[in-house]
Length: 180
Image (cartoon, rainbow, N blue to C red; front, side, top):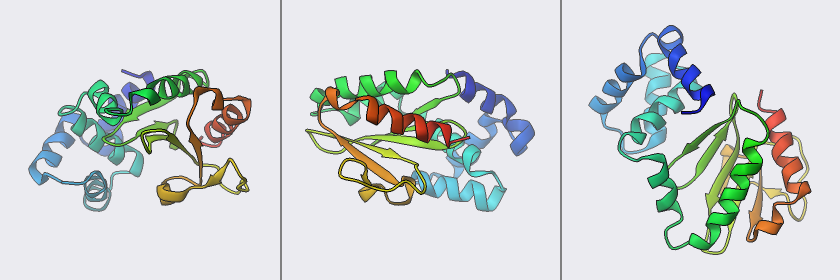
């Protein structure tokens, strides 16, 4: 388990009043269909901060879906995109040890203190990389967030590993630096 994630779990009883296992039981009783419904419940009914609520809901789901299974399912029929995904993860992990990688059903959230990158296999031929880069102008390559909506401010479409160049890595680093 990632060190930052383990620290968050260890701090959970002090910061939220309950352990991760206690929160999992609460979510199990409610049986939410959508991730966002669980997060909203924890925030509104239990005054849990967004970061803890998102982590609790995500880790509750991981009992049912191992991280590797979630990734494998995302790339089923899109296996040609796995080298791009792997290269992105290598570049992202090189930024620091304070990064948490959270696979979900259709995407992978990359979090420092908050999400700064989102990786999504958008089609059979490309990955969409979402960024949080507030006040950064869009251009031909660094597009508006598109289908990511409020989760991200920008998006880059990647069809080949060679597109993970210095420019793209600089945007990833900028998003990482702003996520404190």
